[in-house]
Image (cartoon, rainbow, N blue to C red; front, side):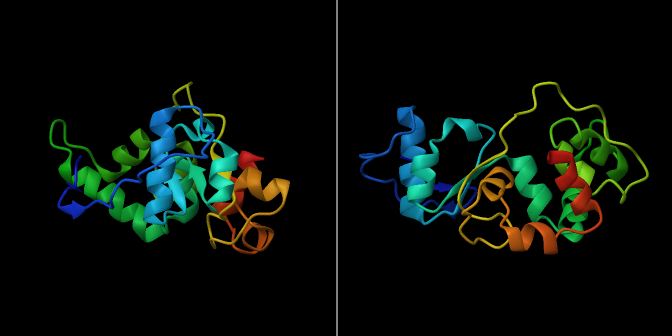
Length: 177
């Protein structure tokens, strides 16, 4: 079994998936390994493949990467990421504005949130965007337990969902509702 990736040591694999109800044996192992590692968030494009019961029992959430980045990244982090991607794009070379545009294909929420940084509109999103972006009980902004239906749908607690979202963040949240 692989013990490291990109020079970082991986946590040991869980010995058992007993009691988990996620349908796929492979994904039950992902949940078990995440619990063993103390993870709060499973970043995945397949949010709907993880059983809510498994996530809730371990105070975790499964989150689409686009949605996670849109709600967690600061403007500085987004600009640094775009700059890094533009810097390694060699064939063909791409400007930061072009990278931002291209990210719109798979990361519509992220590019919507930071759309005012670059003077360019993201490309049309792919049609196969996931319909479920969040499942679980850990707030994406403050890590608190989500008790209500709206919080569990959006991944945000009532305190964070309203008070913390301003400007482009509010537009993102309105876009999702």
